[in-house]
Amino acid sequence: MPTEADLLIRRARLLTLAPLKDERPRTGASAGDVGAIDDGWLAARDGVITAGGRGDAWERLELADSAVVVDAGGAVVMPGFVDPHTHLCYAGHRWDEFVTRKSGADYLAVLEQGGGIHATVRATRGATDDDLVALIERRLEQVAALGTTTIEVKSGYGLEPEEELRQLRVIARAAALSPIDVAPTYLALHAMPTQREDRKEFLHQVTKTVATVAEEGLAEAVDAFVERGVFETEEVRPLAKAAKDAGLALTLHADQLNDVGATEFAARMKARSADHVANASSEGLRALARAAIPAVLLPGSAFFVGYAAPDARRFLAAGVPVAIASDHNPGTSPLVGMPAAIALAVTLCGLSPHEAIVAATVNAAHALGRGERTGSLVKGRRADIVVLATDDERELAYSLGARLVSRVFAAGRAIA
Image (cartoon, rainbow, N blue to C red; front, side, top):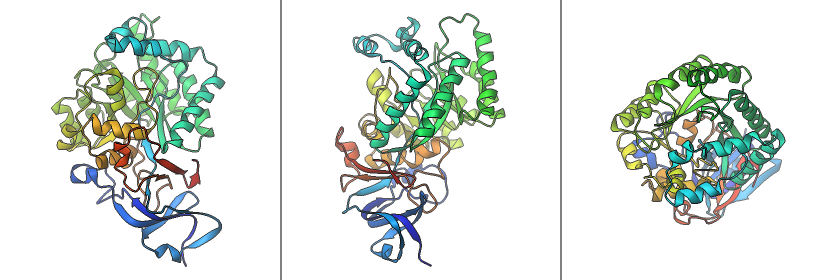
């Protein structure tokens, strides 16, 4: 019997990003293979892709009476973007700090003086739950309109365990209202609270909180900022063990500004991803490659803070799966949407346009543990689909700032 569909997109330059030999993230020659099909079509039902192909084979489909039919007219149709690293749960702005850093101030020096993360912590703690939900909702709407259909959202601007739990509950409320898929992360160690004097006790309390996070189903992963003057690998080790014991994934802010061995540590701890990694050592890259752990590059942070962006060619040459993310946050990457992240990943990090698209879709999905759910347009995947206002996907990297996303479907539902 012909397949019934409630969504059909036809006459498209279809980027399937289809898995090749297995479900692992793409490396090597496949890191730039977008699986393009000209004159392609795609069908879905109940939010799941049911069929796809080339030419007019779609005519054999049985369309539901209420089916949505999109004639792409040769435009690019691709998977929805996956943003695997964001800090959307915050209040306030850091415009003054932005200006100060552009005048030459060092980021870690700003942090030590009570600015940086601490400024956002004060503003976020002062916001009501309803205020934070509304702020997250608005930000999710903004990125969805720019093609993001799956996104990670971290806590991290509470610092104290009870405040972090509050933020995770707020994120859960916003996620329940959003049409896109939200992956919550407990950013347990972002910075030391300014009023805390007993560092060991703080680390102990943070680690104990992992059990509560898991019991309430508030997060899928646990994160920590491993950096000189912030937290060391040995301080994070008990947290990593607690995450594993609780059945939560581990991800790390690793070697962003200095090589502190955090990338190798992420590999040893079997982290889901290692993020930032701008100063990762060659040993760290080899460790990630052996473990097939994605490196999530954050070109927006390098652009706004002003440090050297990670050289993606190093990672690709070492066989490391490369993903990219917006790192949206109020202080060091106020970047909105994945199209801008793709453009910056090409201009700053050295990815080709096709490599950046792979990094923003299927590899980013693997960085969130969702590689078999989304990030490619094949049968059985969520119908997370973007229609571009161009017939050449390379324009995502070329026309920085252009509004290239014309339609967005999340789980088969039109959301933009």
